[in-house]
Length: 126
Image (cartoon, rainbow, N blue to C red; front, side, top):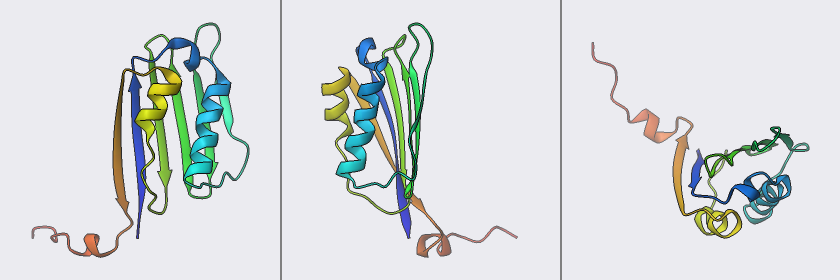
C-alpha cells in the first residue's frame, strides 16, 4: 500500500493572485472536486498583513493540503499528500493560467507504507 505526495513550486507568478484568498480557496476547491478528496473540517487561512502572502492548510480524510504564497518573490508552494494513489493533476497548467506562473516544478513522491518494497531492502551490515 502506498500514497502519493505532490510538492509543487510555482515561480514567476503575478503577485496579485498570490495575495487573493479567493484564488487560493478556488485552487483547493478544484483539487477536492477533481481528485476527489474529503475535507474533515474548514480549511484554515492566514493572510499576512500589508503586501504579504497567504498560508493555507486543510486536513483531509486522505491526509492534507498546504500552500504558502510569497507575492514578494512571485512564488507559490503547494503540498498535497494522499494516503492512497491518485491520478496526476495538471498543476502546471492550472498555476500558469490562474497565477501567471512562468515555471512550475511538480515532484510526485510515492510514499510506501512498508509493503513488499520495504521487505526487499537489504538488511543492515553486521
